[in-house]
Image (cartoon, rainbow, N blue to C red):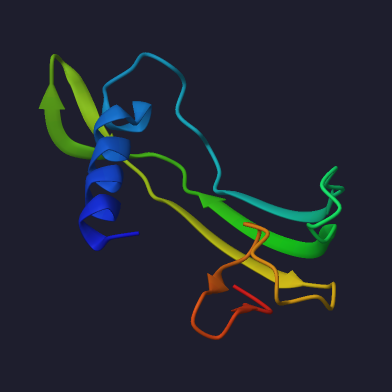
Length: 119
C-alpha cells in the first residue's frame, strides 16, 4: 500500500462525503461515540491434500467519534456552512497460535514468514 494511494483514497472520501455539502437535513445536536468489538474466526479446508488446512482467530476493537455540526460565519446560497469532525481508532489482535500462514486477516511479513500478532 503506497502513501500516494492513501492520499488519493482520502481525497476521494472527502470529496464524496455528504457532510461537506450544504443540506437541508437537521443538524446533529450531540457528539456521538460508538465502541464495537468484532471477533473473527476463519477456517480454510482445502480439497487438495498437499495444502495444509489453515485457520485464524482474531479480535478487533473499534472506537468511532462523530462531532455535532457547528455553523460558521460563512454563508453560501443563504445557508451557513457547517463543519464537524469524524475520527476512528481500530486495533486487532490475533488469538490463534499458527502465525506462519498468510491468511489476509492481519499483515504478513514474507521475509520472516510470520504474521503480526496485533495491528
